[in-house]
Length: 168
Ligand SMILES: [Cu+2]
Image 1 (cartoon, rainbow, N blue to C red):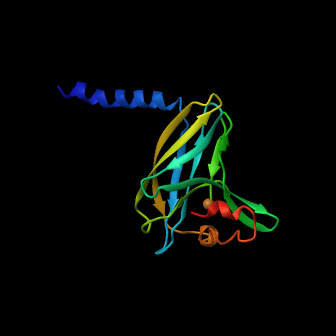
Image 2: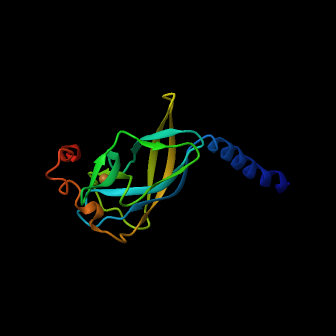
Image 3: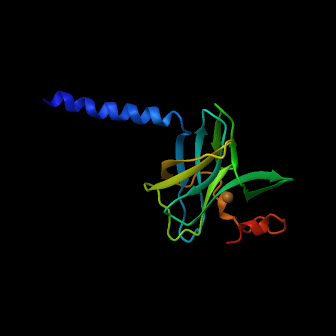
């Protein structure tokens, strides 16, 4: 009698997997834990899309202010800025990581602690203008290297024209 039941779940999972194939795949998402009073942090992951698309936005219940950012060397200074979108070439894995592209979560109301899981909704826009969203559950990981990476947000770019983009 239980036999039939046992097959229901795998079938449902297969159906879900089939749907997901048409979508962007997200691997190893994580959010950097914060220390008390820290108001911004980054979310990182690997993205893979079967067809060319662009990551154009992110939202999370943690904060109303979440943006796609790029970090890059300008001369000998590391700066970050908001970007309108991050390209995902077809069939290629693109990594969001400390020191590169990341999702910036700002205006945090509370500390983000290791062991928590942060729901993220990623919005992608294809070449045809069609939008799709992907839900991600990102575990929070403790600070590791480069604690200064996001700590200087908003103050690091003091002298550049890009700095005003970070005011909120
Ligand atoms: Cu940033």
